Length: 208
Image 1 (cartoon, helix red, strand yellow):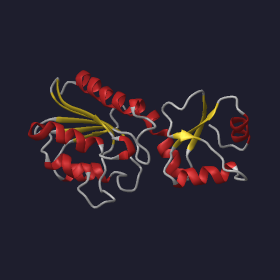
Image 2 (cartoon, helix red, strand yellow; image 1 turned 45 degrees about the horizontal axis):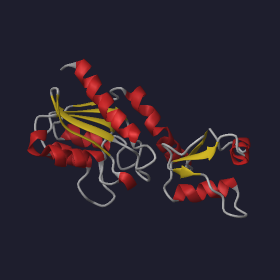
Image 3 (tube, rainbow, N blue to C red; image 1 turned 120 degrees about the vertical axis):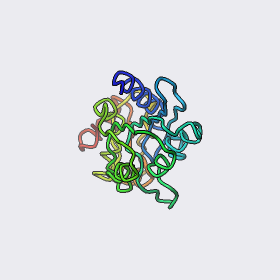
């Protein structure tokens, strides 16, 4: 195994995911690279709106060339799909990939180690936690939402990389607004830096 190459290709997957931050809710953004040696067969990212997943797009692009290839994915592949369709881990195993490198773990109940277990049960070598520290910033809001039920809120000068701007309906409290936006699937919101709303959210403990 060539560790320098593995690091370079995983960084490609992480960079691909970073570009799509704020565009894939309610699903987390995932970058995936399938390669044989230095030859990249596919590089994909979660589609707008969260579907299709990055892994299934990459497998479609690679086709039969995926057999014997190495897969670099920024977040643990799903172990089960809410739709009942084949999970990404099942698809990767069925494609005959040689090994899978995963950066960040996925605490979502349909994954949470199940993707790794499915791959290993199918005889696919898995290395989890590979460049995890570099991928983790992509999933800070995702983890916050799973833990609290509320979107992560930050002050910013623009909405680039965010799911949406915090908006309050008339007579709606910030807490009610965040609960509403959380139910809608948003994970990372922004409030204009220096605004009265940002100050109010910070005072109430909602602004990170």
